[in-house]
Image (tube, rainbow, N blue to C red; front, side, top):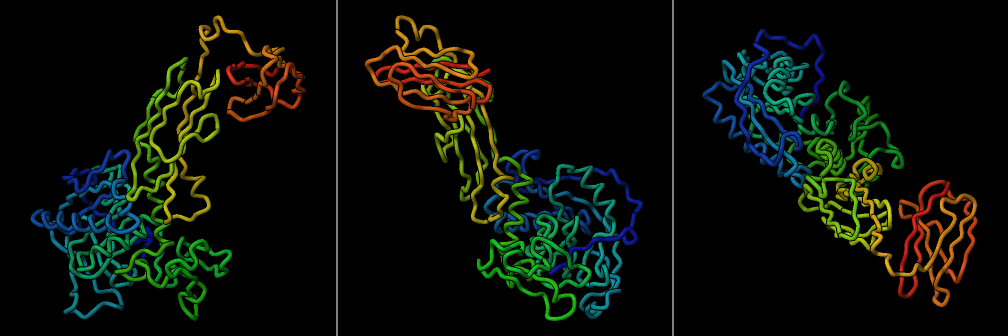
Length: 459
């Protein structure tokens, strides 16, 4: 239930604290290299040294809850979680009591606390809007202690209800801290807007907020009717009446709910964008190969979500040869003489994504170029079943069978394995080849006992 705050330069307080201090970094969850995985980094604020054990316990609980919530849960293995132990001189956070909606003095008294990031309630005249006042200090700490971060979450050591989103996700240690962290991460990680009315100044076009009410044009049209997704007006009058949200029950509207399908999709697309290819490694590592008569094993090792929704496809010269396998064994007789192209393609086909651009944006491909060399030994003491001439050719091509008593089939393919001509050959065939583009082609002739290939060149 918090506002994504954009502070102006006039609101930023620059403290004289040192900007290059190195602090202890605890590893909370580790699934893989920090250069690959998505790194969530929690920073302590308003914690004295003596309070660090409590901070680490709060991070462990909050991070486990974070990675148990869909869509993070299905991709838990894509994340690392770390905690930076930043000491403050005092426990707590400022409460200047300047917001018009402050609770009674006894419910939340006026406080001035000496903390590292100068966190404070009452920001932007909203009591619950808890922010860090010293953005420079936050950026300095993260860049000097964990520059490969993907998500910053600042836990503020105060029991009062508050938080904010924006460039930093900020949450107090109120009893709703775990839900607060998820909601504010919806702002910072998923770039989501609030689905309650935060105020006229916070209305803007976002994944889950729009002025468009036409079902054929609304940005979440693919989700209409799914789990209550619709086009709901923020209000009946004034500015709220101009804006719409996708759901009545979403974590971006009220804590305790799941993220709605529209928000889940936005978060998951960010996960896939930040994580990049799900390929851990592949073999052969060399992607330009030369073979004669040996088979080649192609293998892929993947980071897989749970349940696994990755669809894999294998192609040889543009034709699919296998699907949903992590390896293929390619025998030499399946390859054409000359250059062959072996491709692997992987796409996450999760039902959590309905974006039309998903396949184009998030399909990953690995390609090997395999040059198959025909050994001269293969043709010793064996009559050729056909001849092809001239080679190189230009406007016409002749294919002549050397075995007139047997029906023979011919095929001509380009280097991508695409068929450009085929038919039956009785003795001799003349082909008009003016329509063929210049380049390399493979001619294959086969009858009931023999098979031969020729590489030809169109000038």
